[in-house]
Image (cartoon, rainbow, N blue to C red):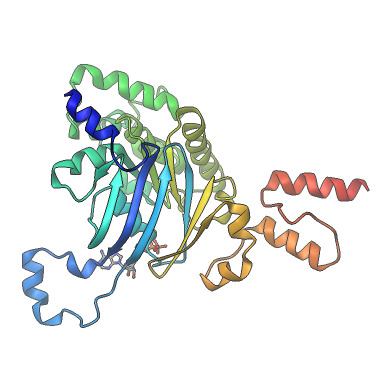
Length: 308
Ligand SMILES: Nc1ncnc2c1ncn2[C@@H]1O[C@H](COP(=O)(O)OP(=O)(O)OP(=O)(O)O)[C@@H](O)[C@H]1O
Ligand SMILES: [Mg+2]
């Protein structure tokens, strides 16, 4: 056993890199089963469309990374690749030093990465919140006597203590998504991916979910990949990955990304409202600092101006 351990720690990647993409490309066109292949045999296109093109990046354990890009840019494909639901056509992905293409590691990768999807109702399978949270645990073979304590712990963490016996459809959207997060947490993952998990929520539900995710990131050092169209949700990320047409356009701090308005517009995205407001003020001759991107920073900057 100790031999395995030593081999792992001598891995070429620093242990800090929980996710590493090396020249990854992916095409759905290569990913059909035999039956489909037969059906499509004569329709295979001459130019194979790649949903992800030669993407390289890495994410450190405990980083909060937002992935942004217009519709169809490849965000969900990156999420599925990271969770070993699909596998690179070219290149390599390592999750916690595991090659996601290694069939023997598929379940270990999936246990390491928890995913929350857009539609809360599609994630409900059980008749009680408890059942829903237990579902993943059953899949990874957690002993029955350990299950309930894991479920209780996870529900408590997301603020749903005492909701275990409730019917999931009675929960609000935000509560449903928090229950989905609890289902993941119970599996003790190292990475949580939210694929537009806030898209169908009202502002209150969005805030509830974002608060839980930020707390997980800060308190538990959980690595978070947050895919969203809400630019206001990404200003507090450690880093942003901007993709367009399957390619990585840029990565950097929110301040760096949002200061590149032209690049954002080319990638089909709006800059956050605060950035827009600051640009407007500046264009109207009002002297505001050029690194203001969060609401809190805007309040401070405006207070200074108004008090003058
Ligand atoms: N199951 C699939 N089969 C074939 N092509 C697909 C499939 N899913 C996505 N694609 C294509 O792959 C590309 C990337 O799609 P993807 O869903 O990753 O984008 P996205 O950034 O998540 O978009 P959105 O913001 O709309 O969710 C698009 O061209 C899309 O049409
Ligand atoms: Mg998507």
